Length: 332
Length: 278
Image 1 (tube, rainbow over the protein chains, first blue to last red):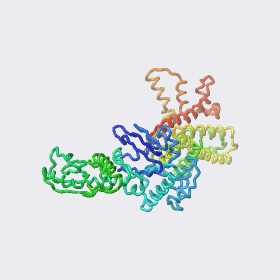
Image 2: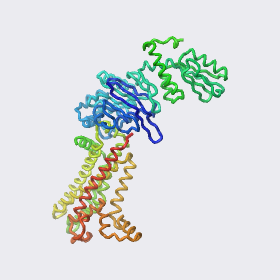
Image 3: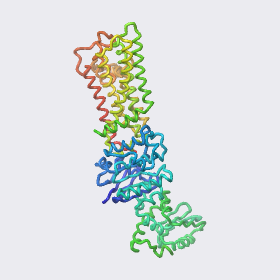
Image 4: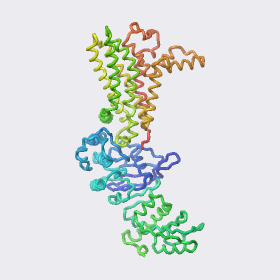
């Protein structure tokens, strides 16, 4: 069963493309981390799912409800922590939870929920206007949990939370997931989603550039180490695509960046460059998911190549029966 | 329906804790007390005369109170993003508009009633009689008048996404439909007369200009004075022409006031329904 099915969803503002034909599906009971740098289109996607925005193209369903035609029925069955949640300044925490429950037409025990998200009891009857960002975020989470929703959509739930709040949030997400709740959770910080998500999708510039379990993504990146070679000048038309083990290449100023699928190919790259230019520096970065995400988040020019390369690594995984055993070329 | 009441209840709870709003509404209460007190110090105080003055004051001041109390109803939620909480729930946008109208109307009518209670106490102490035949219709017409400004204010609020646009819209509406109607020396009706008669040479007749006046909520409200006050007693009130068409009659003014309450709200809802948030 799919809880969220997004099919070619796009959103344009005039010339600006906020979301570019996104395809994505989240299975029931899954915790899905929707990762991407700020401005990548994560909130646009969520706002489209909630009916706050109208799609320019494509369609989507949540729990089988069409986002455009059945928005209210859809929202009745989900819990939402919206982007930049802002409480009513003159309503108390309890009143907020009660308000959400009344709008959803469900019974609620506000105290139990507020306690569960870790809002201290002395704050329950205080006006939310005096809350810190962390307290607001906990209140938002309590409101999202009203009515024990089947799907939780959390837009940057960790913003403003201190480390203890983050731990609490992770614990909550795990509890909800154990309970069978589907969690769709956006963030721009990898370590947050890594700890709780079954699957991660990375969104950059309105495009899903990578998707998979943490292990899949890690395997994908471990076979793709970035190699930067700084030279005096990169010759016009210099090309490495004929080299085995080089997935992508790009040039920026006097630095040539390559993505190497086989560590042994690194020296080959350096040799080739050495023939045509004077090498000033060689930077070989350790491959990691963080490096991958940093590259995406920084909008590195190598990203497109990496998206393609990712697909080929999945194939490689398949040929080794999908196990996590490292292939010989990688360790070479 | 229950969602409308939920929105109204929580909105009312939120705004009634706003001190600024109470300050604005205090102004209307203070003016009411002042007018009744001033007339009450006369040698033979007459409550109907005092209310005659109070009626003009109401035409001019009550819309300000209504606008101040409702222009942020929805635009304020969009500016502060509390609307994200509100619409993340299965809330219908119709319930938002209706609920906001309900709570803000209640708020303004509530402060109106406070003003009348204060006025009533002054009347009991200073005036020979509490003329319920005048006071009753006065209260009812004031409540109808409140709707004709809360409706458009909530509607403008539903059509705008920032505080500044909402206040610009509401202030513009007030000036156009009240200030530029009530004061004859610089009224829109006279400007129209100048445009059509003097510039274009069109003879449109007095009924046309009277109708334009009657079409505005402030003009309509003033026209309903005939329900309470007799032109033979109050010289400021022009005599009622028995042959005038229905659209100039006081009962039709009530229809216009009710239309001002409902029609802008419908337009506001229609715009809000299609609005993109965030």
